[in-house]
View 1 (cartoon, one colour):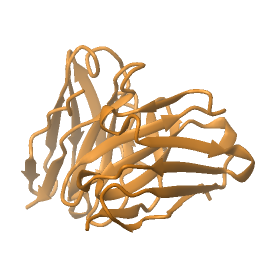
View 2 (cartoon, each protein chain N blue to C red):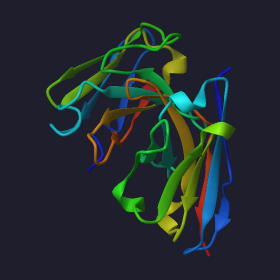
View 3 (cartoon, chains in turn purple, cyan):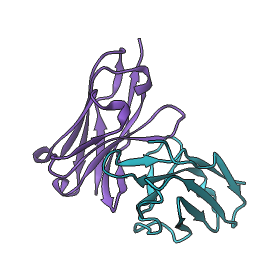
Length: 118
Length: 111
């Protein structure tokens, strides 16, 4: 079964850091581009970051550039999101998602909640 | 990069059809045939329903169909069923700078 499981969320103070992980199973992880997508409470989906199959190319939404870093370890079938200088507006459920079809995201993990508050 | 524009809500009775629009620009929806649609039930992760404007992943009922004209894409759900009540989001590839953009979301209610 193709599966993605996020972890690492929690409560952090403004200006703090957090590292999210996404563990993949059931498919050849190194063959797929991966993404982080977030959803603030009661709001819509927002694409956050993408990393290509071998990690050589990385892309970010403007609001996180310079603060967030996406990475992957194909040997561990895992992807990460290092989040620094966190702000209240970064509060959201963070999902990892595989690019399985031509630019279609499938599947998605169950999400991990990040709360930035003092 | 601004979010794609969707109507906040749409509704229909069981058995009827509902169509949701998704309006972008020539830099996203209009520039590529890479529009996807996602269904999200409360408290759940999104699920891919349509990719490449009109293609369905295996397991998605053929009651779900997609199309595009210019800068606007559409999702039609035919033969509405109670389980179709959910939030729906469109997404488009947006080029090599901001890779992807999502729509504002539409809540579909089955009356």
